[in-house]
Image (cartoon, rainbow, N blue to C red; front, top):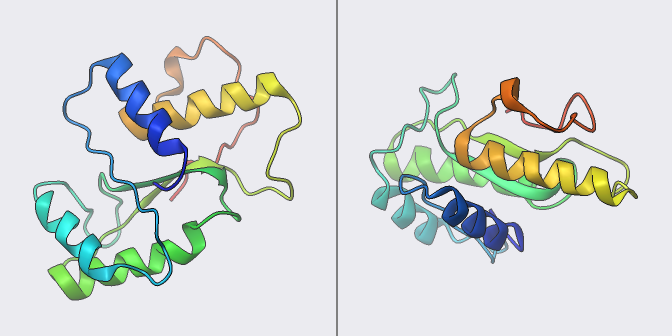
Length: 144
């Protein structure tokens, strides 16, 4: 992840008492720190990175919509780092808001519901079975 969502994820992880979730923030994306990312991927070598087709448990989380923020820039560089540096094909999962023409929803309740959905999906996965709030939209951008 990158930006403020890191602090939201850390806070939510502590609330949920999760001990098996590592959160890594990447604050400088240009020039891309290939060596630092490789070191972090080596540190978490037991994490399922996928098999080149199916996504594993490596997630990029951002609070901006999918077509905004660093996702489009970072994704190919993370894949290249894993492929060239570690010799494995990583398939990243994107967790964040769906693509949008506007970075904001204009409704506070919708923003809060989307943010809660993003945090939950990033930390425990996507499970729509126990939603107490109606989803603000059918797609929040959880697809790969």
